Image (cartoon, rainbow, N blue to C red; front, side):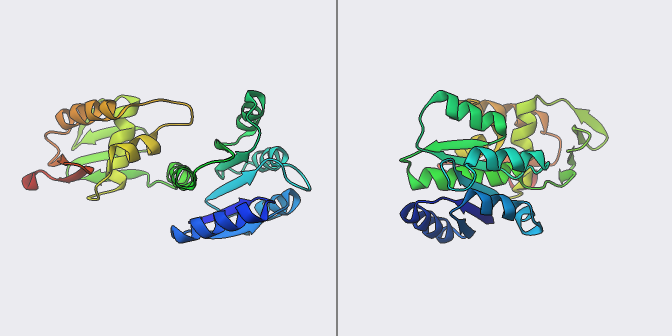
Length: 226
């Protein structure tokens, strides 16, 4: 994952670089808003998975970087860093096109989790996800078991799509919540259990099952192995 950090505080920028690199990410660091805007306007900028962007920057500020990014039609997710706790500043950043924000000082594990969540939400998805007799068409937004269509609510779809994207890997309840919810929405761990229970009934004849791995989460697997 390629992350661009734009932060003029040298100590914080170095810490962000070290932490994100330590989590397996490729990280570029810039300290000037104008340089960040120039990079994001190039082909190199198109390969960036997430931008971690301070608001108070020399050159042009973070708000203007986001505005220009969205004006070019780029959908690259942006996590704003701000020392400003005023509601109007947070609202302005989100209205300009930022996807999330953190107020300084913040915990590094939370920043890493938010960067990963943004990258997952914006990662290119295959048009059709399938396992057993179940198929989800992401373009048509249709779910089928063989030739039979099944009805799914928006959140049931999102949970099932996330499970299919991860194949036979175990995902936790919190990972599901982080991946499927837009900023500002709310969902409890108990609600995830409810959606999983509903999905089990709806895909009971698909030849697959949602297995609970106690203490860890859920995974999809062939029904014969349940």
